[in-house]
Length: 451
Ligand SMILES: [Zn+2]
Image 1 (tube, rainbow, N blue to C red):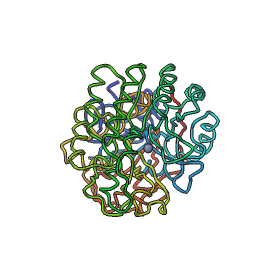
Image 2 (image 1 turned 180 degrees about the vertical axis):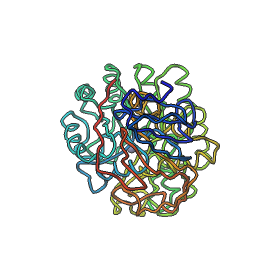
Image 3 (image 1 turned 120 degrees about the horizontal axis):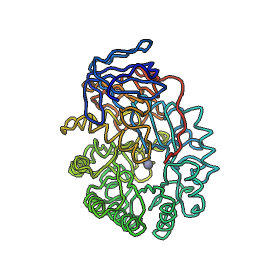
Image 4 (image 1 turned 120 degrees about the vertical axis):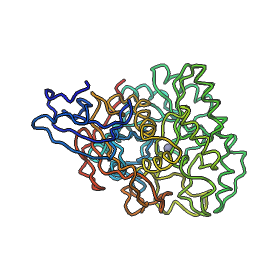
């Protein structure tokens, strides 16, 4: 459909001089009927009788962002985060779909019963559409297919200790067994790829110095884990995804594997792409995460990986905790960076400096994550998809004030940064859920895998 068609119950028409579509950014109107995009038409298309027009002027109309890497921690560690606060922060940041990670909540999402518990907790609190990853741990191979059938989007595993005892890592033999099981039903395995032996032999020094922490999580740990993961995936003909890549050294391995036909995809995160090891102050453990934020030269190569199309997605890995766990000792502080509400402006600020466009940002933060999860209704402004949008003032700036963040513990590595890109409003299935920072009551739905 290329015209705004008045015959399909259009109740809403959105107009902007900058609509970011899969064919590029252009002046256009977007007609919405029954919560879905009915058509993307010319800028001056006639508004059907009875439909409301929202004209955003020069603010950009983006598809709602899809964040496939969020630790909501609910139920069980709700002092750290919860579905109410996390999904409010997501909505305020232009995210309309999030997928929750299987760990840090109690119970972890490792059985169908646990999944149902989490869904029941999330249902009344979800301000955005919310789905779930399952977990692959050493003793739950028998639970993987039932979880797949129950609608999880794939399975997360660790190769090194996860930080919580109820979610143990897989050794190489267990990895192969779980991967074979998942490949057998066409599922997706997503992996925290740091090799435990490299971590164990790295120098471990406690204290407030970031350089000591960085030395304890060397690039080799990531590179070796990625290499091993690719070898298993190639042998088992499995589909795997590398979570939160920080070491740019692994990019050639991944690119070469893809050329051989291995089904491996990769994500990176706003903190790896916008913050550098060089700028982390002593004791500033709000910058601690695993794998770690590395040097500026590494960051440049990650951006090259995005430009080359080796890195598919940018997702938050929002992983908060209570403020008391962010002690000034890098060795003992909880690892995790909170950025759910800030990912879009953080990435846009850096992307525009590096000559990228909003089309690129939308591909990395909406289209590709939706594709990774098989969310064919999400991730693009085109007829037939859900009417999920973020309205962004790309040239406006703001300074990050932790008090204005909606996530539960207002700790953030971005405090005081001035960023480009203000989210003016967020729309979920044709309804405005955020306007100028005010978030409406929850109307998010729980999502299950549909492929
Ligand atoms: Zn994570």
